Each structure stands twice: as C-alpha cells, then as structure tokens.
Image 1 (cartoon, rainbow, N blue to C red):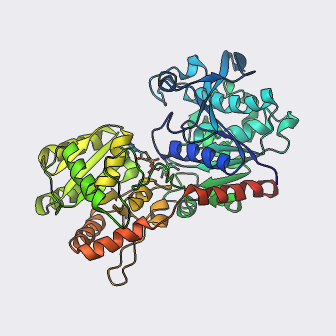
Image 2: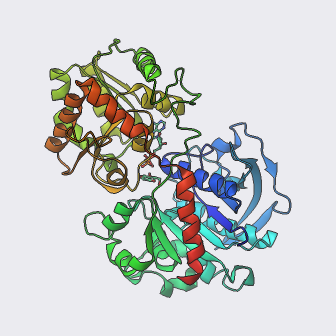
Image 3: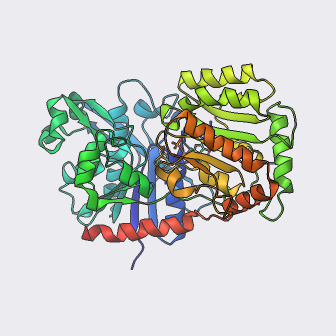
Length: 486
Ligand code: ADP
Ligand code: GLC
C-alpha cells in the first residue's frame, strides 16, 4: 500500500502554539505518521507569537500572496514552513496578518468564526494549488470541523478531492464553535443553510462542530470511554443524539505519549534523571522542586502536584471542601502550576497564602516547570469532571508519580486503582464527583505512601505502562485505511 497523504489542520500544534493537550496530539500525529513512512501535511495559523518566536520560517513556493474572497472581505494568505522538532516533517504556517496578528491563539474580537474557517479553507486550497490529493483530511475540534462540509460544497467541484475522506477528532465537546447565522456569508456558506443542523438554523445559529459530526466520513475521540460517555445525557453536551446516530462511525483511540519528551531517564528539562530500578534521582528531583517552589525540604511528606488549565472541566471545585482539611491534619506539600478561570486562580492563591509552608502556586505556563512537577512530585491530582483523554496522568505514570484521578474518559482507561492485596494498580481512582469520594482517594494514597514497599510497587507498576505513540499511530492508520469503506 502506498504511503497515505494526510492533511491535518488544527488551531494548536506543539511547540509552536499550545494551550493544552490538543497541541501535543496534533504534533505527535504528524511526527509519527511521518516516521511510519506516510505523508502528513499539517497546517496552522502564523500567530503573532509564532512569528516573533525566532523559529526559522521559509516561504512555501507557489503559495505566496494568494487572495481569497470571504463574503465581502478579500483576504490574502501565504504559507511558510518550519521543521517540526525531532522530525523531518515540516509544519505549514498560514500568514494572514488581518486574522492572526493578535496577542493570543484565541481571540475575543468577534471574528473567531472567520479566523478558523479561513484556516480550514486555506488548508484545502493549499492542496489545490500544489495539486496534492489528500487521502485523508484529519481535522480537530470545532476550529477546523467545517472541512467536511466545505469539501461537499465550496470545493465539491474539484476532482482532486474525489477520493478524499475526512476524519474529525473530538478532543473536547465543551467547545462547539457556535455562532450567529449571519456569519455564513463570510464563510461562503450562505447558500448551504439546508445542509446545517436545522434546529440551530431555526434558532439563528450555526455550529461548526455539528456540521463536522454530520459530514465527516468518521469521527474519533481520544479515549474509548469518552466515546461512550458523549453519547449520554451527562457528557453529551447537547451532541448526544447526533453522536448516537453516528455510533457506527464513531471510534475511540487513546492519545499516546511522546516518550522522547516525557521520559524520566532522558528528560533534559530537569536536573536529575532516574529509572524504575534506581529512583534516587527522583528523591533529588523532589528536593530540587521544593527548593524551586520555596517550600521547606522533606523526604517524609508526600508532594502532590497539579499542572492544568484551570477550568470547570478539571474538577478543582472538589478541592474546596477537602484540601484545607488535609493540609491542617497532614504533613503534605502541594505544588500547583496553572492558569485560567479567575475563581480557581484565586482559590490556589488563597490556599498558598493560608498554608505558606505547605502550598506553592505558580499562575504560569512553563513547560520546564511542568516537567519538574511531574518528576519531583509523589502524587498527581486530576479530579476531572470530564476528561476526553488527559495526558498528564500518563506522564505521571512514567515518572513514578501516582495519579489520583476520577474515573472518567481517558483517566478511566489509563489509571487502575491500587489494590494492596494483589499489588496491582497504578494510582488511586474515585467514581462520584464529590468531595468525599476524592477525600477517600487521597486518604488511600496517603496510607499507601506510609508503606514504602507498597509505594515502590505502585510506582513500578506505573512506570511499566506503555502508552507510546508508536502504538497508537497504528490505530489511526488502521482507521484511515478503513475510511473509504465507511
Ligand atoms: P487539556 O488538553 O484538557 O488541557 P491534557 O492533559 O490533555 O489536558 O493536556 C494538557 C497539556 O498541557 C499537558 O501537556 C500539560 O503539561 C500542559 N499544560 C497545561 N497547563 C500547563 C501549564 N500551566 N504550564 C505548562 N504546561 C501546561
Ligand atoms: C482536550 C482534552 C484532553 C485531551 C486533549 C488532547 O483538551 O481536554 O482530555 O487529552 O484534548 O486530546
């Protein structure tokens, strides 16, 4: 079978533009598809932060200063490319200062619909201008979810796409790209109202994500459990009906981990390295982390780490009722890095002020510190309300840092509850979304911690897990190959 040509389009690709796991996943997909001998082409905006980051950028020949009509607006784009780190693949950046020369990746200027529909159209037009026929157009979340609809409307005439199939990966259904219907004009979809979700049209709305779910050849989510959960009322977020209808085209493929980047034996972002057989480097990492966070040194007290976007999804509401009690009662340390919604930032600021010798909070986004926290903590807290996959718990396992997680989405699929009788299990898992259930899981972790033999076994179980991309990429390729028959 010849190599597959896969066009990927995403609002985030690591390390260039990242707010969360989406960026890690789109970068890894590209890197590992290329490694496996396929031909991926990944397209993202040339955000201001990318342009000014100092990465080498080369113009893509034949793709310079190309005009595109978007309703009444005439925009111009060019493609620039740069190597994807640790790969021979290159990423393509779309330059269009009118849309992308802003402070952040996402904006609140009232033209998000155009910023990402434009990216989607340019991705497809870049194929046309280079006469490059993709076997698969693989799009991610709402931002690029219009691609399947564009392929059957605006670009439906072009034989180049005759054999092209589409895959929409849902990383997070909480964000659906819902806009007032008048944006259709700028999207060049004004005449396609009949193809949209009619209930939305009646309400004067258009949803990018719903259009993707309707027209993609297949849909995937980033864990099997989340694929099931989103067909139910609790986590369907209004999409459950349409997802159930497409059940036979809905697949769950767990994200992988890039163990070139996240491996305690080789991690160059931290000062001390270690292996499952010799954890002395982890003890040194713990000391280094506490020092960096200006907390008193201790070997005896366990360190609980958190690295996260601070949004309601991540379940930190549960901490309000439980964490302060533990901090008063127990000798523990808590190290938190994250930013997001103000109420959670305020909560962690308050916690750090209330327990200055036990809690340190950094309202920052710092990749190095994320590695330090994974390596230097003993436990890692992810009490998520929902979690399509989650990457940090998989990193934690590899770093011998026991995850404390709620049984939801990818957390349920990757962490198994510690069983002291059999010595099986990799972390501490609780079910109900309530503070009591979380408190019990933390208690169970602290109890296990006090028994060094058990703790070591638990760590080794975790460090032996393998969620590598080498494995997961095969599942994507298998699905890509299936698309023509779906
Ligand atoms: P989500 O995509 O929902 O945010 P994931 O667990 O899939 O959750 O991925 C989060 C990714 O973002 C991880 O690579 C994590 O290390 C990183 N991350 C999140 N917040 C921060 C932060 N404040 N600083 C550094 N990295 C962060
Ligand atoms: C989303 C989800 C997270 C997942 C990531 C990458 O942001 O919240 O669970 O790991 O996408 O797929």
